[in-house]
Image (cartoon, rainbow, N blue to C red; front, side, top):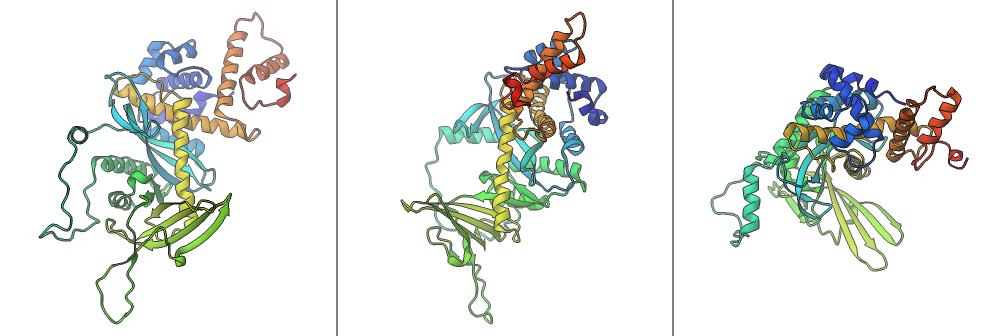
Length: 446
């Protein structure tokens, strides 16, 4: 079985030896335990040397999680031959009570409504070759009082007066590159800046991939300030314009915007690819277009899907600030954004992101970061097993560690250790119990 303490040796420079020993016991317990992952259940599975008080000490201790994530990724996961994207998204976990640090009402896409809980913004590095995401930085979202007051006002006093149409008299043109970032984008910018400082020249990043919530000019300006090219999604009803081409090159013209894009009647000159699968025709268009709210020309890819039988149409609008990015890569890179959702799923389902009941600031931070750190640990452990069994999953990994724990504790009760060959067979049989993909198919029938 892998030595967890040896796996954490690369982190010794950034924390104490005592913390590493506690951490190794906690990771071993989380890999083998069943049921909810809380401090109490972890202490029960740690065995000797892992009392509840010891687990409490770990969760109340402040740790440099951003550096720990990066060092572990660099030492155990990073591959020089691979290309990585920086992907960000927010995850909301439901919590009860009133004492948990940062607890507030956040919108959850799973429930499709605001729920009481905690929110965390996560950054992950996505390998284009492996098509997997690895968490690299986590920060809790704390609502500012101004945001809370604004939300409360909108809920209790809906706006009655409508904004007057047209441009206000006496207003002047504003530089769209000079925008004031809201608290959300400021928090994200600081998080990315700290990450880029750690990566420095070791891992150059080019693209930042965000979901449709950030399909606005302020997010574009933020990404460009950080030296990154943004890949994002735009509203399906966004008003896009073809750059105006003056028919008379000898005549100066200040006109900037040409014809407006009609999504129901796309110009054929922008068509890049068309294919039909199961009576659904997908047309892919790419063009450099303008938006009156954005500070620069955008590389836009429009996917139009048409049901040949019913003639129903739908479309999606993706864009990038990199004007030279091909439509294949733009679509592929944005689709890789969804890999961060698998990080959220694993952290909630297997590593206690939904289960922890900590209430203090340090305890909440450590519980959330530990859940995401376990995603990287499990990915590293799975890599070795998948070389022999490509279908090996986290459920198989936990079943194997659990079986190893049972055998290890049982052998301690025997007056003498069994024969090495018998002992190997016992480990093989017991660690296969509960696994979805056994190491040896014959072992389940013999």
